Picture (cartoon, rainbow, N blue to C red):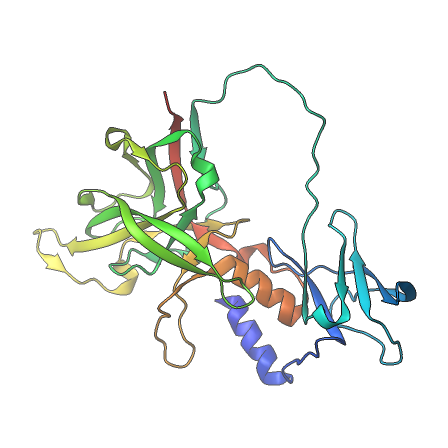
Length: 314
């Protein structure tokens, strides 16, 4: 990926940045792992302010060595203010956005019966990925998205199919663990749904819709990880084949503003995939913040183009 090459070049050309717990830090958005610039902070000694400044726009913020302090306070418009003792000041300072609550308004209406869950954005052709037999990537849908709803349909998008392709759709229960600072990973549980073997015929392309209503899939209080699992490829004579990579059936990817795309990463030395599924967009946000002190270009943040159509329970 483009951003990984950039980070690798950065690490080769410049010394690795090291931090002391009390002298250097960068502020990062706790939810998106994006770098936050120009955060106000005040140093205190015995509850009295002794120094005030603003964090840097594009680099690590270094505290002056000649200021004695025992605590620090951070504040920025639209973020929650936080205070820390000096001993708890780490190299990464996590700030969270304020949630603005409006005065209560009672609206009499009907909740939308049909609702599509997922992002609809611009496709990035060069990022399309072949269907995989192994569980290499997928999309996480979090439990709050399914409250009082049943899944009626799955919608996904493919590049033009060059060979007849059989596949399955699988839903796994899933739990997120860790954080992007130490790699946020996904722990998969049991299979909640497995479709029969489905088929894409040659020359099929773009939007694919699979009706799931008859299965009455109820996923209240569960995170689900959605994957499309390759079964086999066939030629015109219905004989199993192994096509070249460029002729494999590919799932389209799109620009994403979320952090719900999990995949196995490739080791730059061994070229082997990690055992764990890693939160890719959260990791990219964090890497850009920590190493480059900026937000990634939107083209670096992608996700599989998968949607779920849901309906209200009766």
